[in-house]
Image (cartoon, rainbow, N blue to C red):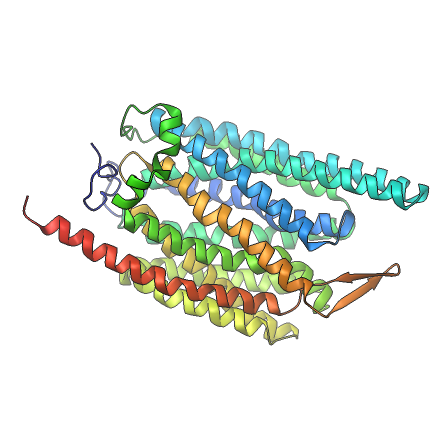
Length: 460
């Protein structure tokens, strides 16, 4: 019986047969390459797909929020099932390699579905508003369905299999560095997309844009087959797939593992705060602040925030994960508040750098804490829980908070005689308010840690 099934403190993943605190070059190569390619694909899905819908199909922020929410639900269900399967079989490599290949193909397909919908929509517009509206709705539905499919594939490969493999391959002594590096990957993904591919979106060449990212993801899937090795972590029980899938959702399991679930709750708060503004940030910079060189601004921010986040990851292994989290969350909040009051290139760059550094360091710290609390043989199942609490819940709640704030924003712009809404600075203040909820969850988690330590020290 594992500690996931008992009332004592959770046992961490056993160290692989390597020197404590050190990872081999092959493992580091897999972490960096597979982690980066996954975040490159997620950048397209999380940010540019929203821009594509806004520019070509619908300016209604509720449409974007709905697409984000439905794709999050699909991703979570897929991760719960795929994570449980990989735990039972111990086969993470096949999910990573095969999943990345399929992920790349589905990403490239956006260019064909979107291009077809856009072309048809232009022809329908000449036929009259009713036809144009019908085609626009059809295009939105098609993109949402493909987004759900792509999210399910990507989450199975990246969140269920790859992230569980990272847990299998690391120890508490090196997780600060590894999770610090992984936390930077979304920033690097954004940087590459903004720096190398943003011109394609400005020119309306969406097919080539999606195709390049899709091909890169598929190639990574092929390479990962030769880089990733299953760690041979034994399955904790002989549960059937359905029982293993829902294991972590049982109330009895939640009561026995309060540290893990409260850690994930903190992650959920950070995630909700992030999703209040992230889906709309490019639109905010371009349409509200009217910063023409927003790609350059984001590039500078991402380079600075990436470097600072890597340093924070190394610091985390020295001072501890909780102290790092207690610093990172206030830094994140300060950056959010700053973003609400700055409008020019340089002040926005400074505020955004503080905001993104705080956000990514917070995620790195809480990610490492959740790995430390992962019971042996349940890494895939815990990744399913992470998707539920740290991804799906934030992506369902956060964008709708942002959409509600945007709906009350008096700012707008006129395009072809239509008055269209734009995001206002209130989305950053709303995100900062959400972060206040970290305080009660952190307090409850501290109590749970003390309680678990007391049980461990008590005589048998």
